[in-house]
Image (tube, rainbow, N blue to C red; front, side, top):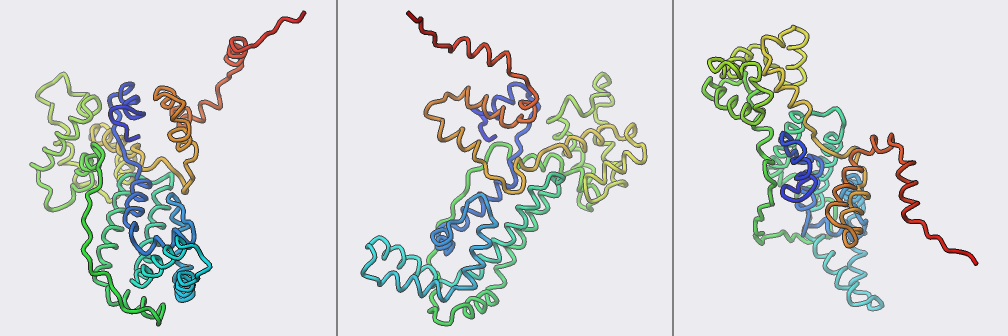
Length: 347
């Protein structure tokens, strides 16, 4: 739903202007992982094991198999590159993969890909909320960053994987590429950040007032709606947050439970509304690494014979599949068959 100007996102925004763009966490993590392993030793895995981009479990199994049989696979590639019975393209590809396996990167990538898989599976659960997803992604980022200090451990493990591998390490500097960011991608969690950082010592009343004003500007019809006719009470939301600091817990679901169990909805009405909005924001639009063949087929294979309007309609039908199954199309089928009927008079 990244089509901001012409696509499904633009269509839904015209219907409901209050809709906010939420990037799919699982797809975003998958894009980060796929782009990270490009031009690396995992290209050999793609060639040998045909890993699927949308299924990290296949990559984990591939890296595990490669680690366990590293010496034999490397020797097989070397023999294949010297086999004169093979085509020149096959020999060149085998030699290229053999040289990549000389760089001893497999031990490192197996650890990274395994954590990517476990994090991706957690992000695809139906009961996860945006706060937990952000903490998971931050913990994964910290984990990958901390791997820089474990170079000696990975070097030792890589050397023990294959004794015959020469000690050739990559020394060339790669150009840093900045990935494309979608509009409003990084703002969503920042708008609600104040709800979960109230107990922090560095959050002052000035910061609370500023964050509350930004969140109220995003949802003007929901927050402070009970006081819109009284200008003197327009800043009641920041005051609620300052008092609400004593009830802050770690998870947003616990915050809402405290309000409901204690009967404090009337005392903190805007906080209650903000928490309910935050908890209903989707984290991902996929579940358990399902393949997205329908969406890919609608966007790619049929694009040459379809216009954007029909593609948007099919996308909406795929999203609202449960409602489509409940609809009755008998009258529509009869009308369609009568219009498309081909009758030929008999003599």
